[in-house]
Image (tube, rainbow, N blue to C red; front, side, top):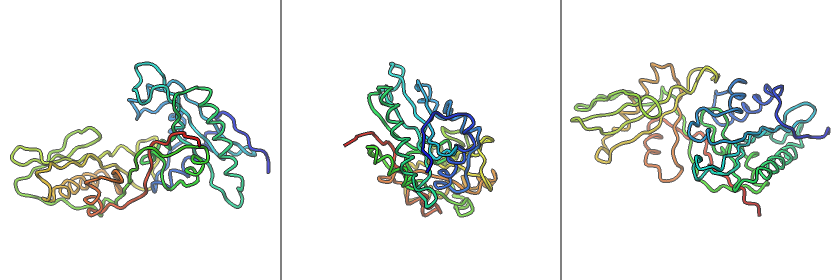
Length: 304
């Protein structure tokens, strides 16, 4: 087979890199792909990460190439060491994402390509002389963060290189909006719609007291992100006051949110919950959500 080589990303790689990224996105969340412009913009900055992105001091994108074909790629970040940077991020290096083709009969040297690229990543982190090395899979697409369980080939590459999972695990859930509860009027309870922290907020009130709220983000299908079929949204920040437990308020709020999503032309909705200790997991699954995948956050380089 022709020799593999690792080199810096070039703009001429943009179409191949986008295709490689989209194959990984498609294994996590159905019907979602990102455009070339989204990928190129994400290599320069991450506008969604308005807290941590300004702390980045340097960005490097590397690709592994064989016969003019990009078979693997990685994006690395170095966070500054000054006092403006949060203590947990100060002077660390991170593989922000790492993608590669899995082994196949017509691509028997995929692991070799992954390891060659990983060695180049570790060499770059060593040149930066950072105090700690982390890795993740934060592709510029909805619901793709941490290291999804649907990428066993990436997990294997991280583990071969000495990365270990040291963080928490989250469950990514999905539901068809058509399967969510419909609005259920309840005497004495009103629901107000306002702008919340992460999207449109629906808050249930009784006797002037807030009983709980839910937020939906319908901005996932931004113009620079192309979603096949109809829309996709996030549901999050579902909070019920302890005094309202057992009253079915969560279904009322989910029904209110679902009605709004139908008006928005959204047909699928995502939710995220911790794998352990979640008080809302049962409520979400009983309301029509099902597990899409699990993702493991925070991988630290601990060789040996």
